[in-house]
Length: 300
Image (cartoon, rainbow, N blue to C red; front, side, top):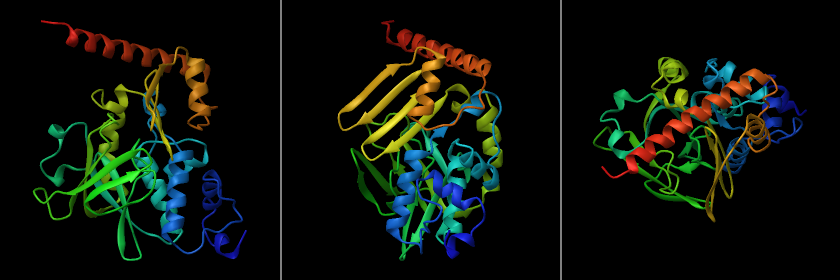
């Protein structure tokens, strides 16, 4: 290990190893190229996932707990993933800021004021005088950092858009996902600095309320240079330049095999009974959703 990496906390080397960076290899001084490398590795290797929430055992979201999940071969949702990544980047010398954000399932659900933001933890990094949007916890969005400039930003097969929101506030922005990625419409955030404790109450609600989408639906996501893989309940989907392909996973064994191989999760601590119960729950939820869709499609 180099003298530089030896000065870091003990968790940094195994975190970097999880990202495919050898413990003896110091990332060096903060640069945009290294930031891109770290971001790409994070979304490729560390999945967005809410399995423990589905099992009724929501994890904590402190930086220590979030980093611990990653070292144990797990992922998390935005409060875990962006909290952990912010901790890593800060130790490596990057100028990182946490921000309060809001996921919009549709344009109609967007909040009218940034005072209500907090259901998403967003990040920015300032490097070489420019601010960049960083997000390893926004499901099927960023593959690399995106410069905080209005306009369209293309990454692989997807086109994203950033827009200022002066009607909400001078520091408010909206990130639009690619229209082909139908899991959510956009994410609003304010550049006002936040701390991780600001999200504790939102985490308690999102991880336990029956109304929460994270309680209602089991979600796994990972990005790579060519597209996105994701699972919603028992349905596995791949979005890339060739379009969308989907298949239903038909057993708990198949589901967990995909979770472990495609999404790189270490689920050895999830026992057989929990695996069977989780898969049965997902099938019930998906059957109810399909029944509602079929009823809505029938002529009145």
